[in-house]
Length: 149
Image 1 (cartoon, rainbow, N blue to C red):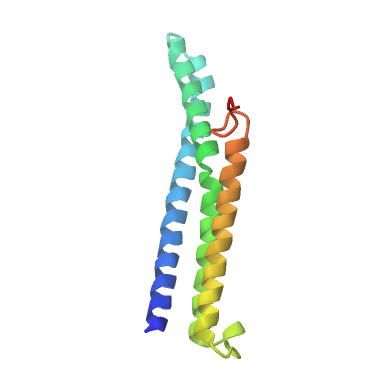
Image 2: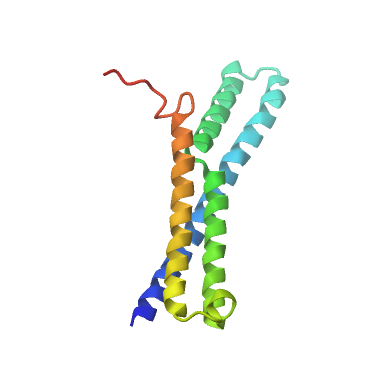
């Protein structure tokens, strides 16, 4: 019974990290395409007679917003980190099922799997927390404002 619970948790973690890695990849790439297209349109529109200057200015605002969202949410860092954790969890599952690697000679392979899965998820959580804290402490970040006593 406990084996089913461990494998169920492992499968759910793999699915969660895979889904969130793909989502962050999509957001990161979408924001970057917006920035590239807007940046390319600025000199193009600037050279066309009759284009209102506020259109060019709006593209600059769009670039600033897209880059700000990316910096605030760290989609690129999340994508890379979540994908790495997902792949590490998959590797653990495959090694466990094949009775290979650290599981080949383990007294209790199931307990070892549970420990290693918890360790991988804990490491990812610590990395995520560290990235969030560094973003929050940047000048202009949510945690950078001085609080009055």
